[in-house]
Amino acid sequence: MAHPKPSEAGSREVSGMFRRRSLLWLIPESAARWLSWLVVLLACILPLMVIVLMAFSRSAAKEQARLSRVLSERLCVPVQLRLIRRDESGQYALSGVVIDEAGSAGPSLQANRGTYQAPRLDLPGQLSLEGGTLSVDLESWTKPPARQVVRMLHNLENGTDLRCLSLSDFTAQLRLRREEVSLRSVIGRAELTEEGRIHGALAGESQHGRLGVKLEVGDALHAFTVFGRPLPWVKNLTTPTMGETLAQLLESPDGKLTLANDLEAGSTRNNNWRLDVKTTFDLGRLPKEIGLGEITGKLHVSLDAYGRFGQPPTLHAGLALADNTTGTLTPPALRNLNYLLTGQWGLPPLESKPQTFDALHLSITVTPEEIHLKGTGENQPAGVFGPGGVQLLSVPTVESIPIAKFLERLDELSRRHREER
Image (tube, rainbow, N blue to C red; front, side):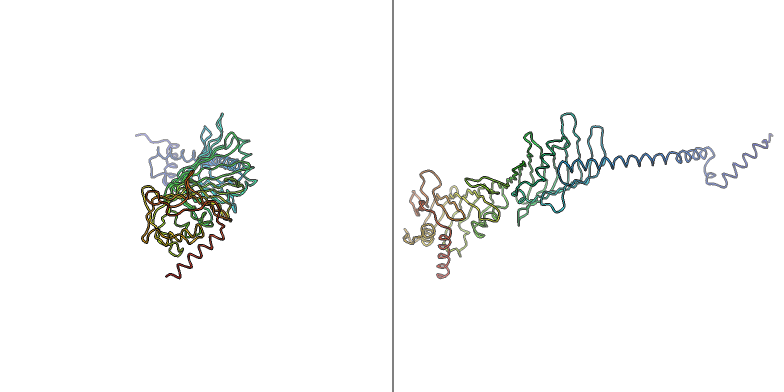
């Protein structure tokens, strides 16, 4: 039996003592050697990895700051974002995008995620945002373009970093004075045209129906047009002319509202909003306190209105009886309506019972000073017509009615109604 050499025995004894006094004795000797080398390797590599990661982090932070600065310069409003990654094609993955200026009346936007495609070849830069919120004060579009807007157009036109902005899966809040409309599932797109203007479109679902938006921004003009069925804001905008009671009787207006800093409407300039809508009006819902009497029937109303915020607008309404329907007028109602439109009480009732009418031809234009009446077509007399074309009420169209005189007649009808009760 061979005995180990003294040097070998000493080496094994030392190795054994080392393993008995460390955790390495728990695993086989060969595995312990590999583990020892792994520990040494990690001790050398980990600092290098930390250095590389720190360098990459600093590079990403610089790129993030650079991209935020570029977008802020192009939009002339602070842009905050977080850079997730960048690929070889120059596309950046983003999160936490905020486009907003504190204390500003301009649009405010926040997005959960997005992508930015840097310009390449003949393709300009594009920012696409998803899953966020957009808040817009519509009244701000009725003011002259701010220097910020003019500067933004100049920056966009003279650089290719950003020429297009698109939105998807957004919610939006559109505010116009006291009324706010919320939209969901919003998609939109805005881009700079070759003429140096921004054209955009937006669409979303409101509580009552779908709304669409078109916008245009230029050096001297910016306009915001809302399309919808039903269209909001109609009642609030027409209240200064029609009064609270009549304005609230307009049903489901369908059409468009344009807001602009300088909108030409008819022959009047310096207006900043315009309505073009079609709606219905139920005569049976007229409050008895007005004093007109018993009237039934549903009217089609073609309504145009325009004006400046804070001032009574000009309003034009074409009235016609709804298709395939008739209405009724009691003798007192016929007499009172004649007085309201002509100032005369001398219209005797044709019969003592309510009269049926199957046609109404009347066009009304209301300005801050007066009311103009006329028929709804060429050579069509204004008035109310019964079966067979019998004219129950003829409306004079030669002279206009001053607003003050019209209100006096309404007060007189209301007074008589109170006395008769």
